[in-house]
Amino acid sequence: MTPVVFRSPSDGERAAVSLATVNSEQSEGGVRDALVEGVADEDLVTFERSPIAILHLVASAVALALLAAFMELFPQAHLGFEADLDNLTGTWGPTVGALADAVAATAAILAIVGAIVAARLAHVDRHIVAVVAAAGLAGASVAIVERIGGITPGSVVLEEWGLVVSVAGVAVVSASFSVLAVTVRRWATATIVVGVLVGAIGADVSIGARLMALVAGVLVGSLVAIVLGTPSRAISRIDLAEAMERSRLPIEAIEPHPGDARGSLPW
Image (cartoon, rainbow, N blue to C red):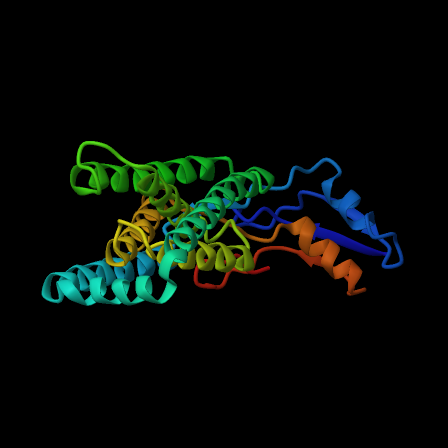
């Protein structure tokens, strides 16, 4: 029988907050039952200004500036590329473009809903505010630009609304990198980006304008992540104890390590 003693991470002095005897042959839930008895595990979720969000912000700002400069210096380059695509697809062009836009918008909506559900399941409801802010700011920005200088100034047509939704989805994925799984982020981003760019075939919104809108979405999402913070969760004492029990490692004490681990919580 091995005694288990652990201390609160916020307490610099040793303090036994729970003492229990745990047999290494106990059932898998035994350690958790012993640790939680009379003890509330600390909330280890924090909201941080992640270096990843800062990197995304800087990269997207540089990319947006370069794209704007390229389109200003070579205005016929992307238009000529679009004309070649239109000639290649022929009469199928508008249909292919409309279908690609629909796929991108659908993927964006699923990404937004997925980010909200993931935040709720992870008990980080504050991130839902970031999702709404990222989608709202990015979508509103594109809608305003399209209304002022879009296909029909003074109004936003269906094709432009599809771009608004897609850019909102990109912004949410950019702001939710710590909530959404890596695979989900990659597939969502790839589907939206490819759909929006292919949607330029036979469409009125140019491929250059679409690409700039997507990069702007990343920029907005990164900015929201920096301002509101991204959720970060460290492993709890109970999770660590259960993992050690499953590995049949004897436990003497579980306490935070005093050393510097570059922002993480070592035990």
